[in-house]
Image 1 (cartoon, rainbow, N blue to C red):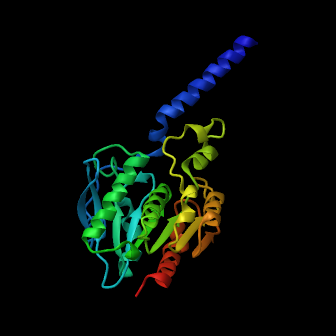
Image 2: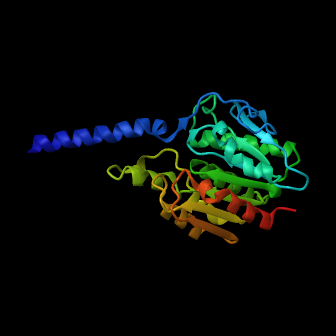
Image 3: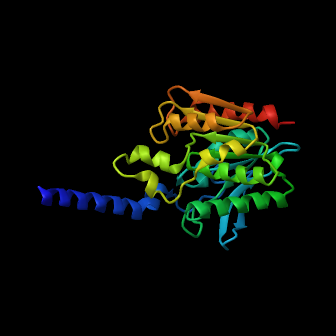
Length: 271
C-alpha cells in the first residue's frame, strides 16, 4: 500500500511540475503573421511599429479619431492576433472613435515571447504612442477582452495612480485574477500558488475612478461570469454592467455587446 501511495504521489507531483513548466504554453495561443489592415477589412487603419522599453518592435494597428471623439485601445484575448479582431473594431470605427488594436510580443509575427510583464511593456508602448498623437489619457478608452482585460486594467491603474486617469474602461468577459481563472480549469492542482502571470485585476480595480463598463455572458465556460461579478462588485463608481443571458465567452457581440459598450462610452466621452 505504501508503494502504491508513493507512486500516486510521484505521478501527481509529476503532473503538477509539467503544468508549471508548460503554463505559458497553456495560457498564450498566438496567431501567426497578420494580413494588412486593408486585407482584413479595415482600410482606414494603418500598421504602426512601436518600440517597447525592452527593445522589441511590436506591430499594432491604428486609426485616428474623428474630430473631438475618443480613442479605444483594444487589448485582445489569449488566442489569435489583432487581425482576428478587425471585425470587432468595425462598430467603433463606424461610430467615429479612434481605434488602436494593440499587438503583443510573440503574436501576429511580432518578436519575443508573451508574459505578463512583457504584455504590460507592450501596453506601455501603446500609451506612449498615443501621447505623440496628442491623445491624452482622458480621451482614451481602455478596452480589454478576456486575457486583455488584465492588461487594460493595469494600464488604467497606472494612469490613475499617476493622476492622469483614462476616460473610460470597458471589460469584455473579465476575470478577477489569472490564478482564480486557472483554478476553475485545474481544480486538482494548487493553481493559485503555481501561476506565474497573475494579472491581478481585483487588487487594482478599486483604484480606477474612470467610468467602468463590464459585459459578460452567463454561459461562459472559459471565464465564469461569477468572476466578472466579483470584479464589478469591487470596482468604484461610476460603473455599469450588462449580464448577457445565453452568451458564451466568444459571442458577446452577437448579443449586442458592442452596441451596449458604445452607448456607455457615449454617455461619458462622446462630444
